[in-house]
Length: 344
Image (cartoon, rainbow, N blue to C red; front, side):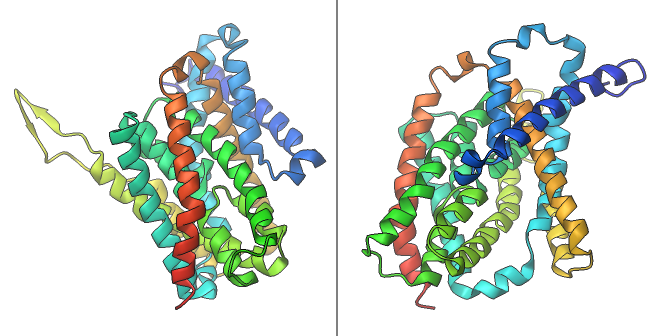
């Protein structure tokens, strides 16, 4: 056991080791050039972890590994739960029916298209296809991590999915304001916010793209993005049902396997509900949000530490092609979905 009396000091050393890398990631992300690009510490963390995994990882004491694994699993779930402090039900009501329609349609279609193309066309394994689709459709790296919590897949598959979020989400952050300034989109500032919020990958990337247009666009975009994040709960519940493995009974298998409920997703929704009542002083919620970002950075850093480049062979390029098609779909399909939604 990782936290048995004998192993506890080694496990804590592993967690502390991840925390030190995460502190470095947090500092690096605070540099002005990266702040301007809206690069979150989560992304810096996984990059630092991957660099370490492919250079000095062989020097890591084996006894510390449980601490890293604890960070990729348990800390991940804690981080997703407290992510609920960044969402309120009032935000959903405030953006109205158009934002709800656009968010739901984009998430549903993107997940469906991504899974079909990933498995049937690009011949990806099921986990990589789902992770890549979740990252594109819901909330980037956080969605990939939450989905990993249900799939319990190998770490390198999550790293591949996160990599696609970084690549195409960053591209979206610059592309959307550029296209808007060309004057070819029939959207006002509010509708453009719905478009960006429903189709750009990461929260930080949504903020970066929308803020480059106007404050009104940014407010609407963030609220719509929060709706997409809340859709993570029904997605994870449905996923836990669809991916459950049948139990073996002698030579026969039965489909009456136990459904693994992702309780961290339920707690995420509960925290969001609690946050909606505004019971905590803002000074406390600010601290909680900052702590949550650091916890998620630790989970991403540990994920990177479990990812070596040789595991990408035969998977990485196909996942990138899938993510590129989803990127095009989010831009084009998101436009038509938003055009339909704003009629309500």
